[in-house]
Image (cartoon, rainbow, N blue to C red; front, side, top):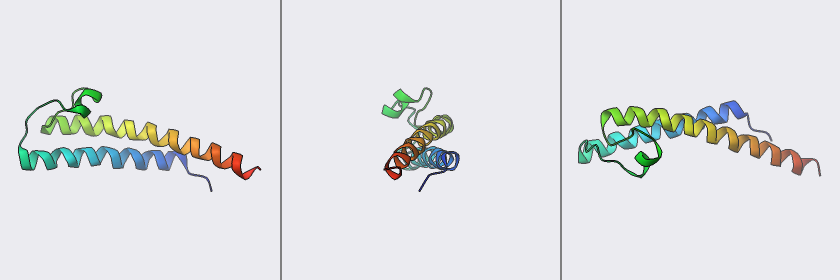
Length: 86
């Protein structure tokens, strides 16, 4: 079985992007907007626990998930093709 690389990549990008967006707003709801840099903020430039940071994080995480999902699906297809040819 092969994975559709574009669909899988888009799914990963949306899940990771909106997941980080929701997590940021969850933290804002309970602790308030601190604006502190976090570990993710060190990876995603401009991200912080704030409303503006949640949008920046959404964009960074979407593209990160998109690229990661595409690489994963492509690699899965390569390995699946090699194992089915034997």
